[in-house]
Image (cartoon, rainbow, N blue to C red; front, side, top):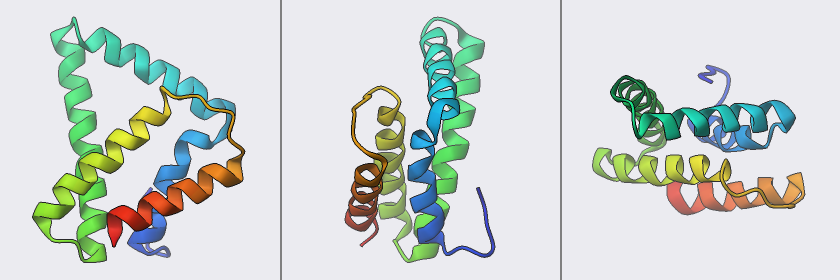
Length: 113
């Protein structure tokens, strides 16, 4: 996801678009949801999910800090952005891709400003 050609804000916007990238994204989300369910009952699976979540949150937090958000605020906002992104896997709406993109831009604006 890191791209030296893109600004941190553009990278964040692309990150929020990932859950909408067609059938492959839906299948990946289904697999991840299955692993998350498994992690509720299996210690090793929980450790793996915790590591993945930590890495993803750290990445988002880093983007926010590069944008100019304070470290404390970046940590909280990264959590909100990540929770939103994970929730997109759970909520399947029939919104057109352009509407998803507009919503993601509004959410980015809300959490980055």
